[in-house]
Amino acid sequence: MDNLINTSTLTDAERAKLESILNKIFENCTGAALLNALHSNNLKFDFKTNPNLNGLGSYSPIEKSITFKGINSMNFGTLQEELFHAYQDKYHQGGTAQYLGKPGSANIEFEAKLFGMINELYQSGMLASMITDADFNAWVYTVTNDGRTLPSSFSQFGLDYYKFIPAFKNAFPDYANTIASDLEPGAIFNVYNSSNYK
Ligand SMILES: [Zn+2]
Image (cartoon, rainbow, N blue to C red):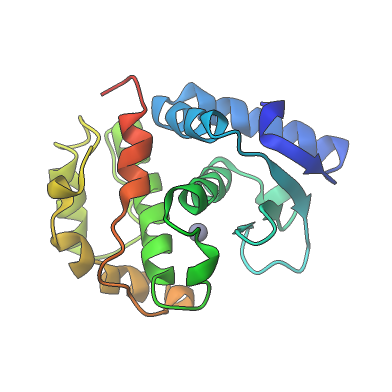
C-alpha cells in the first residue's frame, strides 16, 4: 500500500490507521479494482490531516493530496471516496480541477457517491442509500441486477442517470453546483471493467 503514498505528514497512529483501512478496501473486489486502477496509473498522493477541514475528508485535484479532518474521520467510506475522486481526476479529460465550484462539480460528487453505494450493494446485498428518493434507490437495484452485477457501460445507466442528480443535490446541499449535462460517469465503468470479478 506504500506505493500510493507520495509524501505523508501523518502521525504514526494516523498512518497505521490509513494502512489498515487500505487493507480493508483491498479485501473487497470493488475496492481492489480501484486500488489497482490507481496503481496501474502510477498515481501517488500526499496524505495529511487538517482539523479545520469541512467534512471528513477531501481530495485536492490541484495539490494531488488527500486530507482527513483527523484520525477519527479516517474510515472506509471516506477513504474509498477520496481515492475514487483521485481516480476521477486522472480519468476525466483535463482533470477535475476544472469543475471546482463550476458546472460539473455536482456530477463529480454524484459519481463518487454512486460508486460507494454500488460497491456496498454489491458487497453486502443491501443498499445503504444516502439519497431518500425511492425512484433513485429502485434504479440502483435495477442497474446492478439487485446487487449481483457491476455496471460496465453508460448504456446500462441511460439518461435516467442525469435525472437523479437533482435528488443527489437535495440530499447533499453542499454540492449544489450546476449540473453538466454531458459529463458521463465513465470513471465508474473504467474501474469496474478493470476488475476481475464481473
Ligand atoms: Zn466527495
